[in-house]
Amino acid sequence: MPAEAADGAHDVRVEDAAEPRKVARVVLLDPADRILLLHGHEPDDPADDWWFTPGGGLEGAETREEAALRELAEETGITEVELGPVLWRRRCSFPFAGRRWDQDEWYYLARTTQTTTRATALTELERRSVAGARWWTCRELTRAHETVYPTRLAELLRRLLDEGPPAGPVTLDTEIV
Image 1 (cartoon, rainbow, N blue to C red):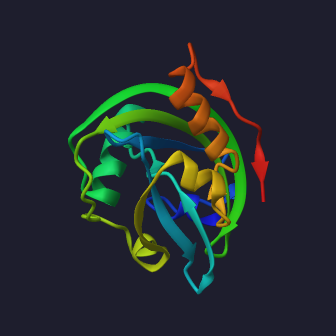
Image 2 (image 1 turned 45 degrees about the vertical axis):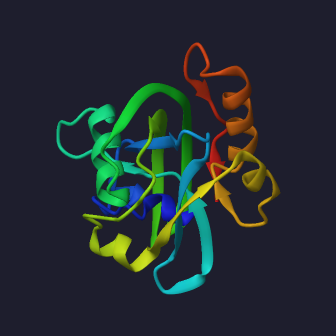
């Protein structure tokens, strides 16, 4: 699950942090209900790869909503979005780029009609570890053999598309890699 830290704005080691890193992620859907995922990999091993939602750590005093929109713009160039509610919350811990990352992630629903992506402000670590972006249908995601984070994303997306957003954020299982 390493690339989840590929946003790399703050390279904080778990042992240096009293609290987990606060992260905002975006479940971005287009008009055809496709989800946008970024393709990441270990900086020194492109074969160790996975797919993940756009997003990253909070900077300064920004809110999670502000961080979600900023990260989305930086990583995809998409700024025309309707940010919705928090769908899911997840704690995760994983190794990436020689560090252990401990994160508290909130996943926001967002919709857009803008489907062309272009990273506009990647960090140095992101430039070394993010290989691109792709829109996925729920069916493609369900059949994918690639590693995707969070690990139950296909099931979560299907439920979201079938039932709509949950009444309140759903706490996902903690993932430790």
